[in-house]
Length: 307
Picture 1 (cartoon, rainbow, N blue to C red):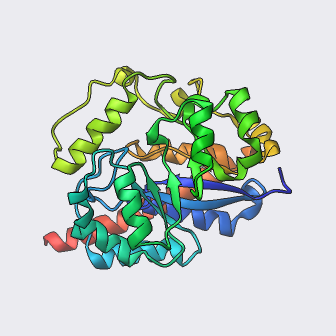
Picture 2: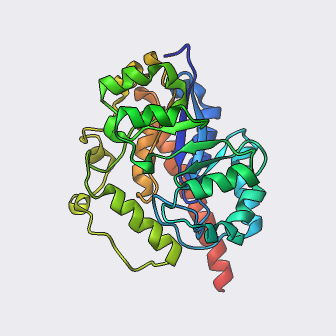
């Protein structure tokens, strides 16, 4: 594993930006405490309120200045920001959205990336923003080998594997020649073969388009409290002990799920996958201490505003 660089793609470039900044800085300041050859390949997500966003709903609004500052946080370190433009209900009329096009213009530097789902938006981005590498999203639910190979035959920068195929040895062997173009989701919280997953993506897309913050989804997966420890019990989970066999096959892109999850879930995922076992307590302490400092500073600023 040490001889090959391995790229990890982190969630919530906006929502988890403080946690992401901390872990990125920790990897620079304490390289010996992190696993050898591991690098941050991208941070994915959306600026709140972007109707092109899919997978998980994100409401709100980000100012132009804040967008520029957040992009700079990552891009100044050579880390791409990857937009989750995977809303499955987009039509041509949505292509002219001024907010989403502003985001694309601000980030159009040849480094940042886009996850895509629908042909209408993909064609638009290829035409209007050709410098963006396009990545085929797991939200497409490609679960058979023939369709997956067809997807890999197209000119995507990467194709994100459906987590139902994480441990399918026949599929993994068949796509091994293109393993460097495959991204594997290591810690998905959903159950394998979930019959409602595609419908859940569609519903999330509708909520994003309609700014509907009140409608829930009857997900059977919500019967248990979500935690990283619970996620590790799922059949699709890939353990640290198993990662090596994927790397040996040539797979070098791994995605950590976390959008819509508590920050502790994301933090524990980072500690598990990125940090050497014997140094997790040290890095956890550093992360918790820095996040507490940030929180205290923010509370002080808010207090002054309210005086």
